[in-house]
Length: 403
Image (cartoon, rainbow, N blue to C red; front, side, top):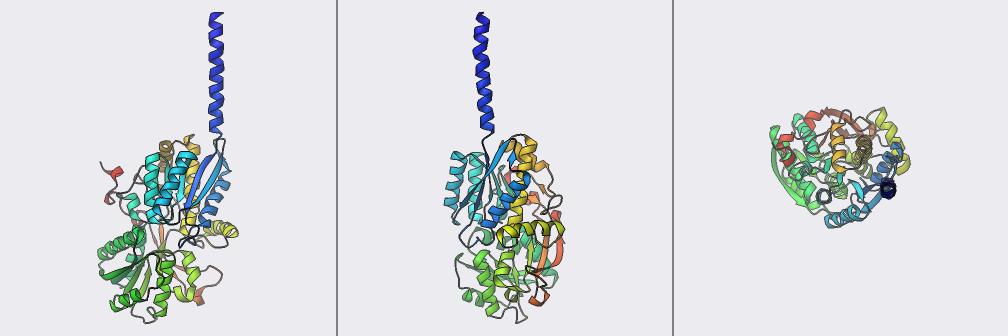
């Protein structure tokens, strides 16, 4: 009888513990979309990033491991300290397991640091700084859609092949612009070109006249625009006003061109820009089908960041399912072991440094007369194969890859 009395309370305790664990497992799996909803990058990401992530959750089925999937959204205001504070709050008080988009490289670099500290996952789709898989790499972060090395490598080499071998940079004065200029300079010189100089402009400037005059005076064959958002758009408009491309002596290179930028400028202004991208909505049947669904929600076609947000979120959820847990190390291991095949990438893979490797594409913006239907903006130039598109893993300085 004494044995029975002791066993019954133990059995009840185990039952209660199991019930509590089961209740805990039914808590939502939370994903945070941290993006620019109101500033200069809101047209490239913003609500589009939110919608793409929601599409991925919907297509996955809305739940994983018996738990509903919940999406939280934050406008980081393009401030690294605001983003880091919100990420810490999400991880500490809302049990957010993964944060995505992270447009603005200063924001991305700050948030991946917090993710490392809190042992959560950060997937970067909006930002391009190659530092994310270089000296700033972590075991908790993935750089998914593109980076400055791939953009520079694609556009730089494509234009050098056309004999456009002297370059001058107009660079946005922040982390992304600096990284893009540095990577493009390296690509241009490696291909036999030369850099004649450059000027950096404040990220929020609206008047590029003086900068453009300096670029014209350089007599460089290529004026390379190392920036993004409204700053980039204003620079292209300024080039058009000063007749840079009409002169026939100089060519504009958009080192990061979002399709929303082209839409905002119009083909009359943007025509002739050479660019590299990870995704174009009109590339094939799969990209068109997905993009039309996205358009129905967002009233614009997706950027490569939007497509990356969808693809990476779906890949993350598949990894959680395969791992049978939301534990960071287990999920990261699954994400790195599973290939990526969807409307964004074919046979994509995530390396040890966190770089998702996939094909990149070089396009040129069409003339107005060449466009046959809405959002028909690009004409295909070439594919940059995955193994050539991204920086070799042993050259980035990532501590995770050092023997």
